[in-house]
Length: 287
Image (cartoon, rainbow, N blue to C red):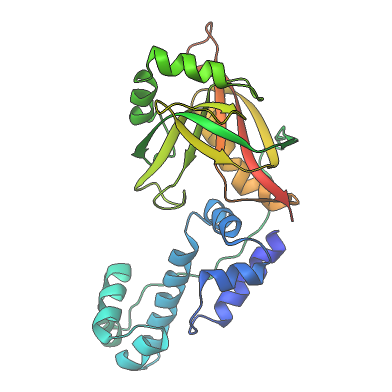
């Protein structure tokens, strides 16, 4: 997929001054919009829209250095007014467009290029499983998006589970993995930024439909799952494995992530502090 990503970068470069939608880019890439945005973010550290904005403003700065008028440059890169362009350019570069013209100094944001980097030769263990439609049932809460460390809001959610809720979850559980899972969905920033909130559910998998009002019930359609076992310091090993799935495994595999809740479970080691075995389940289909 790295070849396709670089072709998409070239496509973006050719259309920087056009009305370039994220859907058009994903269609050109030949993968779903959801999959492409997640892969792009984990490889580049930027959302696709941020990258396009940065490239446009960088090229706008070059045009200003080459003597083009502020009004012409603003319109060229899709801004409806000079004021809107000036605010965006100042926020991005710390300079006013007029400062660039006067001083001959601007800020640059180079075109991206994706390459394969081999680090340490570590292999990722995974397996592919088919699973029928099921429900995620459990307790849920809107919690802050957090990529690293222990999320205190999730800890508080786990501590809030009542004996009645726990007993009902246990009675409903009837499909592998027979573990209490953590699922996240409905993220404000579509999981692409460490900001905003997401819905986090602690619960179990079931095919039973009769669920009381004590528990949230989230339907998950039948699909293929890529499962990634990992073991080590918790939660850092789990979080690092998640990052590697999107930055290393998915770009080099024949699979594409689909828009459905992913989940994980963790089994703590009683004899080792902050150490655990975990599995991450990612919904996918073949490209």
